[in-house]
Length: 179
Ligand SMILES: CC(C)(COP(=O)(O)OP(=O)(O)OC[C@H]1O[C@@H](n2cnc3c(N)ncnc32)[C@H](O)[C@@H]1OP(=O)(O)O)[C@@H](O)C(=O)NCCC(=O)NCCS
Image (cartoon, rainbow, N blue to C red; front, side, top):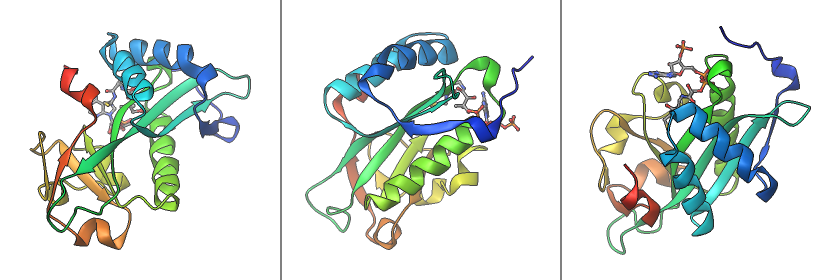
């Protein structure tokens, strides 16, 4: 049974250092293990995070979290100048899932990334979920790196993001240790 949230009261904001424990607990609860929580911590502490947001209640309880880290294009090819990020991980407390909190975090984050001048976002996730926000597995086939297949999707935020492809990319180092 889900606890219902009042969407009008949901606050979406950038994460701050004071949120670290709440974000760790949330990721551990949502994934049922602490691998993703450790991934977030490593991404944060190696300076790879481009955007990290939380959804919270007016009283300050963090219900959802999303992180975007820098993805680096190779020094050659049409995509070498693109600004690319990776959406991972994202989590909502189990009893608050399937009420649109995750969707709100994705939509707002993509707006902010577009405003920051980012060109392309990639994700490895549910193929039935991310396309509703503009992610496309076909576009991701032009993003060459360690991931491929229908779960690997890309969302262009600028004209260059869909034009200056293919691009070969490297993910932040903490992903290499992640299982
Ligand atoms: C994935 C997650 C962040 C989505 O947050 P949310 O607030 O529940 O998302 P929304 O309410 O916006 O959308 C729900 C949709 O997500 C998709 N979804 C969620 N969990 C899913 C799963 N295990 N398998 C496939 N699709 C899933 C479905 O399309 C679902 O639609 P439905 O509610 O009609 O079933 C949340 O379910 C979660 O924390 N899951 C556990 C951690 C996880 O798997 N994170 C994603 C990988 S990085």
